[in-house]
Length: 249
Image (cartoon, rainbow, N blue to C red; front, side, top):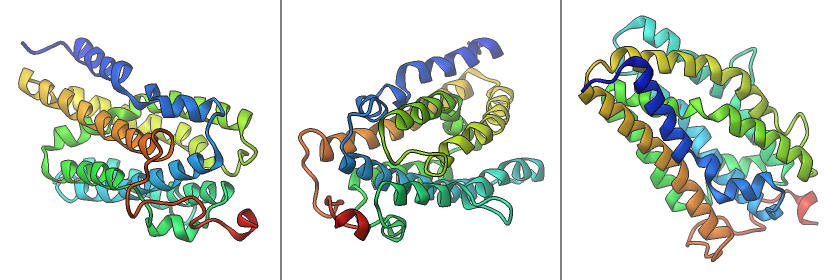
């Protein structure tokens, strides 16, 4: 049976309440000031792979959209990450965070040392958006519904516990607090408008679950490699690699 608009929205929000990666122990460790410098660096390196893939995901989505109005609306997502003449963009802000935690931004941007599981998860998300229906692709982006809370908690926790944290190094998260609401308002309304059968609602909900799995699995891999049992897989980042000279000395 097709759910009402309000009931279906509540269903989507419940997925976030139960499955969003703000519940992962790595984020509790990070925001609580318990991460070592190398654990923070490993997180920055691996999360960069996700950040740099988002514009490619959005470009893949737009390449399939025939409606100019939808393309115009979606275009700002690419600009928010890649930047414009008037906006340095999220990728550049993330590399500033990398430098602040003692990493060479060029090393981070090379994507060398990214965990295999991070690559598999992120690449699967890009492929999902490229191959699934437009409804499923948009629904997968609705993890943005839950992002403002984690960004706010992250800003507060990092400022409280880590010397590298300041307005410059945390500018990515602060900007997302302003950028994400417009994206999620449009995306949520679009999904609610277009998921007009029980089958489509089920598909959209499964797409959102898939995306929460993508985010969660990245943190599972990070935990296993750098926290416990701290077994770094071949080819992944080794502490000390790509560190700025002033940090290494």
